[in-house]
Image (tube, rainbow, N blue to C red; front, side):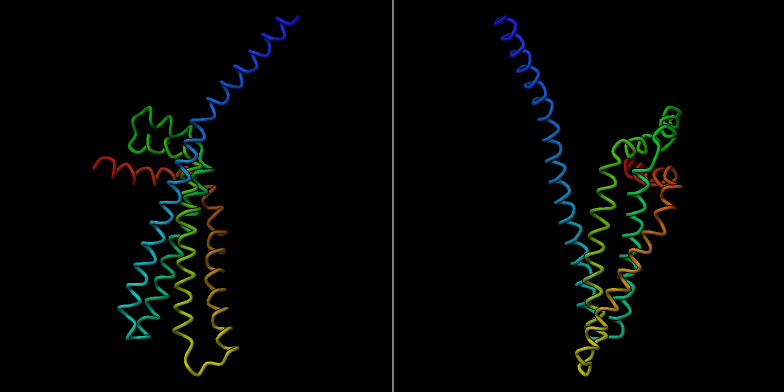
Length: 207
């Protein structure tokens, strides 16, 4: 009886060691992915912030032109955020089977599309989370610039609060509304969106 119990204990310990060994590479991959996400977010937010600040500094002498450019930049950033969210949703909703068939026929971009589908969680994280969130943060900062330009020296305290709140509300409404409208489009056209992205990426691969 003791021999049987000892052997069962050894088997359980061996199984536990095997499961721990299997978990190690997964944990290492996850840690590397988290670091990659942090680096990408830092780089993108820095690039967007530096570009917008440089543009505003060059136009600081002309408030009217600065206001027009600030509004245009906010709209461009919001469009990028919405498109990034569409790609993220499409990646998670996409079916890999059509692309596997296309890859077997050596259709251009099919292999890249298969890769995107199999890594849909990372694609969604990069586009919907990193790019989308960075654009939202930068658009908020640009919105503050728009509010600052609209507020004059004679503006009262309540009017200042109202202008700032309205600018923030408009930016939030465009962002949320745009993403909500395009989400259904992304789900119903997931394969087309992913394949378009795959073809664009395959061009860079060839170079």
